[in-house]
View 1: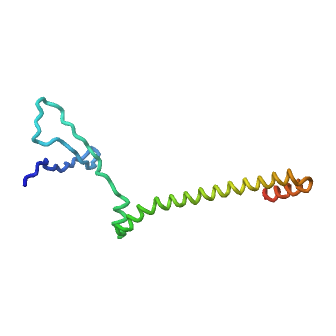
View 2: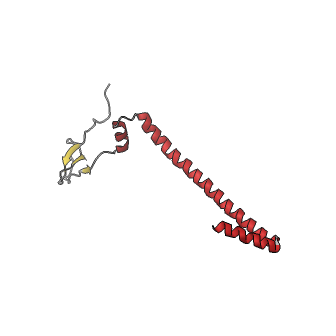
View 3: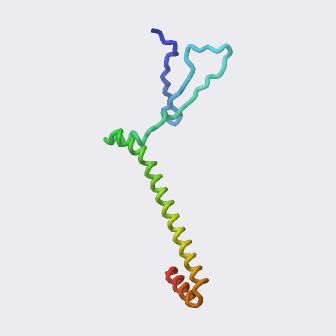
Length: 126
C-alpha cells in the first residue's frame, strides 16, 4: 500500500557564528522555483524543552510521580488559596463584630457602658 503523504524530512543542523548548533527547516532539493528567489532558511535554536520532567525522570523518579506533581501542584495551590480566603473572611467578621459590640455598648450602656467600651478598646490595642 503506497502512502500518498510526502516523505518526512529530517531537519538539518547548522552551526551558528557563535558556535552553537541550530536546526533549520529548508525547502526540499527537488523544488525548482520558476524565477530565481533568495533561499529563506528558518533557524530554530532548539526543539521544545521539557527540562523539569527530564530531570525528574532522569533522577529515578517515575512517570507516576511526575504526573502526580503536575496534577496535585495546582490542586494544592487552589486549596491553600481557599484556606487563605476563608481566614481573611473570618478575620473581617471578627473585626466587624468587635466594632459592633463596642458601638452598641457605648450607645446603650450610659456611663458604665462608656467605661466598659474604653476598657475593651484598650484591651484590643494591646
